[in-house]
Length: 413
Image 1 (cartoon, helix red, strand yellow):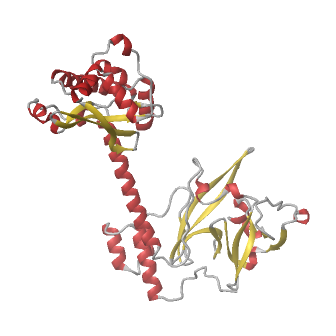
Image 2 (cartoon, rainbow, N blue to C red; image 1 turned 90 degrees about the vertical axis):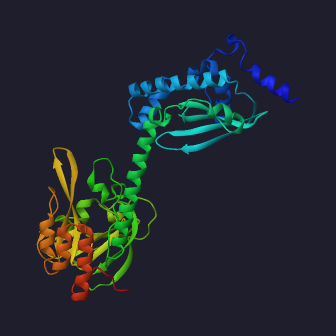
Image 3 (cartoon, rainbow, N blue to C red; image 1 turned 135 degrees about the vertical axis):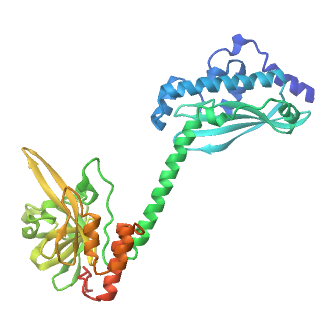
C-alpha cells in the first residue's frame, strides 16, 4: 500500500509537460500555492513574482523594481539548484499537512511554507523559504529546502551552500522591516517617556491631533467641528467651573486679538446639528452669549482656551512656572485664507518667547531656569532633555513657591 502511494506521488514528477506547462492560476491560499509549486518544479520560474507582483512589493518597501528583478534572478538560480538536488537524490514521499512559519506581516507579508512528507526513512519537509504574498497571490521566495530525519543522510552529504538570507530577494525586505520595527519601537519608547513626564505635570497638558496634510493648525484645532455644539465647560474670573454646550467657532473667534471681543455662544444641547451663530434669534439651539471678559478660560473640542495675562486668548498646551501656549493667526491673500500656527513659551507672566520662525533656544530655556542651577547644569550637559528639564523645574518651583503659579483649576460650583 505504501509503495502504491509513493508510486502515485512520483507520477506527479513525470506528468507530460504539455499538461502542466501552462502558468498556474494565482491563488491567495498558501496550501494551494505550495501544492502547485511542488507540482511545477520543472518550470518553477512560473511561480515567481511577475511584473505586477514586483511593482506591488516595490510600492510597499521602497525597493526599486529593477533591484527586485536582480534579486529574483539570483533567487531563481538557487531555487533551480534546490530542484535539481531534490530530483538527483530522489527526495520524494507522501505529502501530508502544510503550514506557514516565520510569518512577517510588514512591509509585505512573507513566510516559510512548510510541506510535510513521510517516506521509508522517516518524516521530512520541503520548506519553501521566504515566500511572499501580494494583494493577489503567493510567490516563490529564495529556496525549496528539504529538511528532517527522512533526508538526514542526504543533507549531510550535501555541500554547504551560501547563506540565502543574505542574497535572497527578501533579504532586503527583512532588513527594511527590521529598520521599520526598530524605528517604531524607538518611537514607542520615546512616547512612553514623554507620557511619563507629562503625568508628573501639574495642570492641563494638551493632546495634539494628527496633522491634516501640511496644515499645522489642525494639530491644535478641530476644523471639522466648526459651528457644531460641543460639550465643554467655562471658568469665570472668580474661578467658578460651569458645564456648558459651546458652539465651536472658527479659530479667530477663540484665539488671538479678535477673540477677546467675540462672545462665547452657549447652546441648549449637543445635538450634532450645526449652529447658525450669525443669526442667534432664528437659531433654535441658541441659549445665550457670554462675554469673554467675564471668563478666565473655557474648554471645548478637546482643547483648553485661556486668557493669558498680558498676552490674550491662546490654546493652553502646558501649565507651570514655565508654560506653553499656541497661537493661530489667520492669513488672507486675495480670496485665499490659511492659518499660521506656532507655540510660545513663557515663565510666569514674563516675556513670551517663540514665533512662527521657531521656539526659544536651549540657552534661553536655561536662562528661564536660572534659579535652579542644578537642573540647568544637567540640561546643558545633555544629561536631561528640554522637556525633562522643564518638568523638573516646574515641580521644583511649585515646591519652593507653593501657590504662586496661577493654574487654570476650576472651583466646583
